[in-house]
Image (cartoon, rainbow, N blue to C red; front, side, top):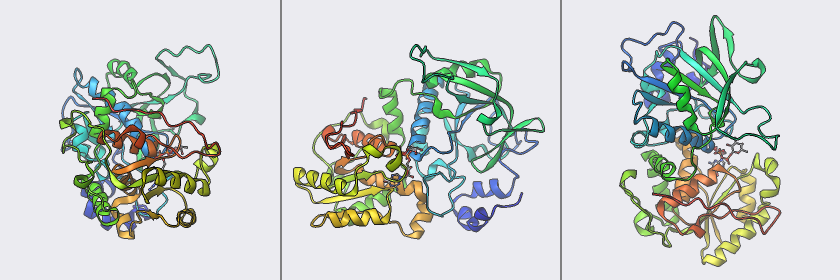
Length: 433
Ligand SMILES: C[C@@H]1O[C@H](OP(=O)(O)OP(=O)(O)OC[C@H]2O[C@@H](n3cnc4c(=O)[nH]c(N)nc43)[C@H](O)[C@@H]2O)[C@@H](O)[C@H](O)[C@@H]1O
């Protein structure tokens, strides 16, 4: 296959960091080759079955983490009687919100998360662990909401699904040569069958789908349609705690905390056991480095949630209120806003210190946009106080991390108000063991 230009430019980097992916890109036409039966030298064990999934391309990093959790919680239960199934982690491909120009396709989860830790909660496997030639997907279930689900008052909300005729304008698959093709994660994905599926319910409804199929490679596309079976219960939190950040990102965040914020786990009382399974509870007390963390979501939120997003002047005023209340004077800011917006905020916070994480270009190549976001989230997870953005999953994931560390709830569940200065505080999703 011809190597795409963006891939060619970064081959050295790929070769250094991802030898298996390098082989996947250059050695085979695709990870889903045209005549691919299971590769004799491949990694697949006899009798193993694979559940692949994919998410709507426009969704962001932290929403995708939430979709993973819906599936992982299901797999955690499903594996007790069906240990032949593994959940295949979809590689990260240049997301809509990743604005830097570094190469960021075909990224494995281990670049961002401690996958070994995740494996101790659910049977998950990276795509590149399947080693190249995995052949075609047998069946794709392309999920969509039942028509009228959100417009009828007398709607029946019971869990159910039904296979419906596929409307070609609603999905991204092309039927060619007896296969359904789609470009996915930078590969040409091929499937024998496409089943458009109206779906309503939690991820455990997949159990019915998997029990009925004789096939071994099933994909759930538009998996964000699946809901959490139970949001915020013990299983949810076990899964969430298993999603430790990759070690190199935690190390970078810790170096930054030490150098710029005079903060460390030992000094701030924010340490947690090395293994998530060893943590049995939290002791809630005032803790964290002597700084506020602010997550200020801008860009698409300025339009999609215009009433809930503060002006920069209002954000500065709200931060000064927090400083005065807590007797602090430093804010670590994470934002997807522009350099001008950051500068404006800095000027308005005269007399206080505004700190941001600004990766060098080599840091950015190493960590990618996803890694930078995680480093910022890790720094925020250890701040004395957090204030986030309304309905941003980026903020929610910071709140989770802080729950895991046992901050007082009033130091975590706070948000910037938009035009209504007396806005509703965020829901308090407290950790459960
Ligand atoms: C309106 C919806 O909002 C949802 O966003 P929301 O929940 O904030 O959170 P995410 O799903 O993570 O998507 C927002 C993305 O924007 C970038 N981003 C946002 N804030 C920051 C920040 O403080 N620091 C850094 N480094 N990056 C940031 C980052 O790439 C992040 O994954 C989206 O998932 C949906 O696609 C949709 O756009």
